[in-house]
Image (tube, rainbow, N blue to C red; front, side):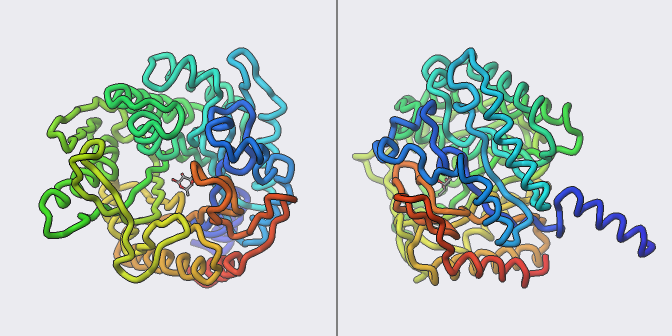
Length: 427
Ligand code: FCB
């Protein structure tokens, strides 16, 4: 290729906001940064009554985007808060859409690639009360909303339709600890299918409007291990958990069917119309989980985190287990689409621990790429401290610390460390 052609191509990439091939980013979600009085989560957790604006990112977004720019990242994953746009079923607040478009425009001006999450756990209250995910109307309503939204939102290529759909089903339909708060497995299966149907429609819809779009879900993957290696029941549970939580959706993308086997020996087959409906695969990776058979617990399962390899636990008690990232990347690579780590991060007040965590995980990515796995991006969770689901404001994931009394952002040592990592790694 001639030098001029090469330069032209390079500037084309720069115009689109892609400085290097690899996406180095940070990730957030709207509700965790800015709250919303109209969302189902607003009254779910009492912490939010005292801190309804959380970090006040809704007003301080320009300042926060400067922080992103200063990090030297070339990508930013964030979500759009549906309940602000449609606080009631019959309203559409265009000013809010314009607000999110301003964020996209600013990012593009700074040559930072926006990646927009369309659903990140929260819903407008009217939606989840009238059309919870197990009801057919849910699919139509969500698609209608995204159709209208994507008529307005411009200059975004990367979309995540759903963040961690399995967590939504487990928490919202089986454990009942997050909205909509059901404890009903059968309803959960229906909701699961509807979410997959929705993903499939959204994939086609967004592609029909933007041929360049790159679409995925963000799938939470963990390593599952037996609590006691010698105990065959713990081993079986770990295997079932891995198949259900990590693998079943990958099988769905590969062949359009999801098979769920429960410890009770019951199994479900879901006809999932998602075969091939992804352009890359988003993985949220945090930890390893140990499984124990316990006849007194729901579905006979108990989980725990253990510090086995000496990397320690996070402030939320999660085991730090970088090696596990390689395992999940290897498994996901059978999808034969580019893999992007859409979330990875640590809750800790200890900057050194945060830096070690980042380095260890980036090292794993480097070695996965050397092994031939097609990893195209890494998004650290999170840009700034924020509200952590059911844990409140004390889980400090941020590269920038937030003083929640006055919304001040204070850089941690990990912020400049992450910038240094981005500059020094060449992939
Ligand atoms: C993930 C969620 C994200 C954040 C991190 C810590 O499961 O997607 O919103 O809460 O955990």
